[in-house]
View 1: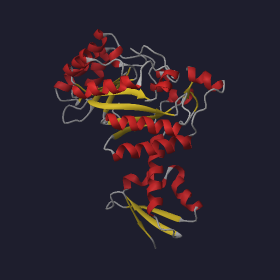
View 2: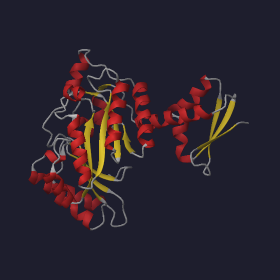
View 3: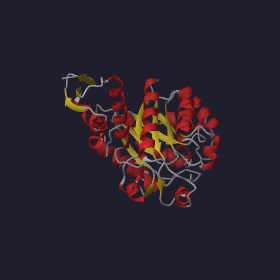
View 4: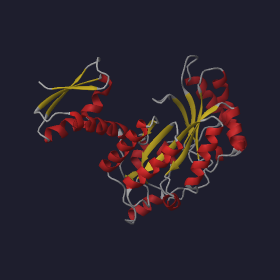
Length: 329
């Protein structure tokens, strides 16, 4: 139940969302067909949260948390907050829409131990937002982000790559990233656009109106985004959607891969190595053991890449190396 980001996550698909975006089917994306009631939240927290000394957030994802009815929103928060007060959770994280943020909402969230707010911005191109049925503007993202900062919350922004209506996926992604950098969030999530069954995007794809990115394009753009954000001190906490069975079954087209984030990391390492490597016939790369799979690449993709360039690369795990070190026999 606890994921690698130290979140105890509750998914509330479409709950509170006043719009149906062309790409969105939260049931298939999250794998949740019903949303939990507050008592279930309380019982789950009590069952899975350690008794003390933890750094785990209780997270409400999948819907538009601040757009649900006030009483229901507070019921969820009341179920979670005692675990923050007792120290069993470090705080509460929520995701929501940028047009459902105001002083009253933020005051309520603050009083119940919420400390991280993620906004589903997706793009900072107003035409793209309109074509995708988002129902908010780039200005809404900027204004909501500013207000969230004023109240002292940690700010996260989510973006999508290769959305419907984008003329140049790379340029759109970099323009959105540039706008994000001006806002300076604490964290970012990057999602490739997938064609999921039971969405308007699926119909647009069937009619040939929408062409999704292929996996190589999506990985290349996302990897560059990761570097861009990291260089500015912004943590990238997720790249690619969670690999739910329902998502895999319902994805019709687009750059889906169960280890999309690792593909991006492998490309980053490959580019780093290629930039410093000497064009010898053989080379030994000593790397931290935690990075071994990323440096080798999925199905030895990085090893094969260098082989195709006439270089025999051997990768050896070495606990004394922080990232990687190249030697030539």
